[in-house]
Length: 171
Image (cartoon, rainbow, N blue to C red; front, side, top):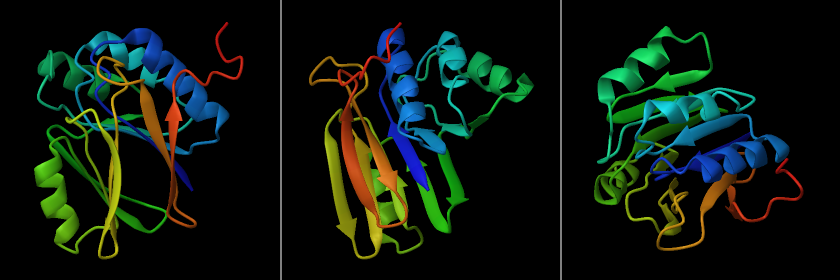
């Protein structure tokens, strides 16, 4: 299974749109957004993903009530987890946490196979025992080029993908 991991989009519509198009093109079957999506107007772009999407708030949560209520009211594929998320995909136990220090503690606990985080805007992968700690970097593109991560659960490999690598995906 391929899982796309995004974070820190901070209302940057063009980069989120490009990232979702790219995740679909790459054949991702699940999308995780590790926080700082911010505004509910970003949700329709996530709904364009071809599979289920999982979202948490982050420290720049925007309109929490509207984001949660729109996800709950939608028949779409977005699962809103609040401040933290836990799920299972392809037999991988996954935790979603915005803050890297809390994510590191979850990864070190031995309770998860994958812990995804954001907040630092820095791409990083690290194995802590049998758990992969993954920060996809920032989708915003403020401090670094906008990127996301693509995890293949078959072999645990992770690719950092630049949103600038469009392969003619823009219309």
